[in-house]
Image (cartoon, rainbow, N blue to C red; front, side, top):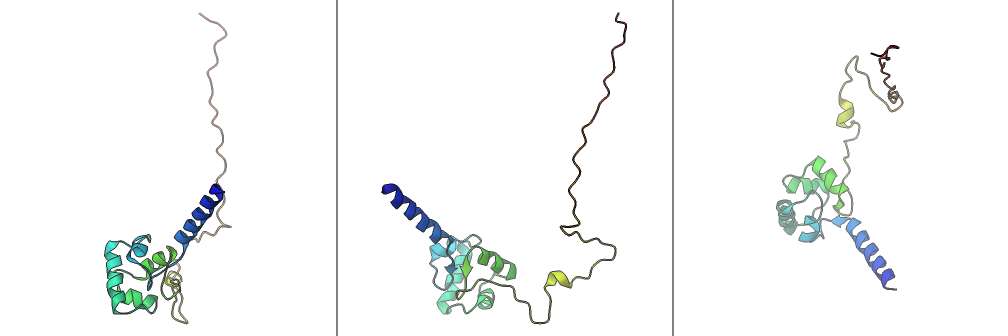
Length: 137
């Protein structure tokens, strides 16, 4: 019976550790516990939150210095939410993400998984061993 109680407690604790952290309701310890947020960022978030809740990710990025698009994506992956939503990089309608806006260089090959072939197995190296002469001194 004791083992079952311990297993259930461990599962509940593990589930809580993986749960999302809502920025508008998180405590200082909750924020510090997230990968990518240190004490300075935690204090900045709490200071700005006293002025009013964060409406969305754009509001968070505008009000808290040091949180841009890439950091917001990392924090979202670590479990941070704003208004119950995770960060999604939304490009304006009709535009493509930055990575696909670069013109392709002429002559540059693009590798796709189908184009990549595994390297051949290394062939064993054969060495010629000098043969002993028929006559021994």
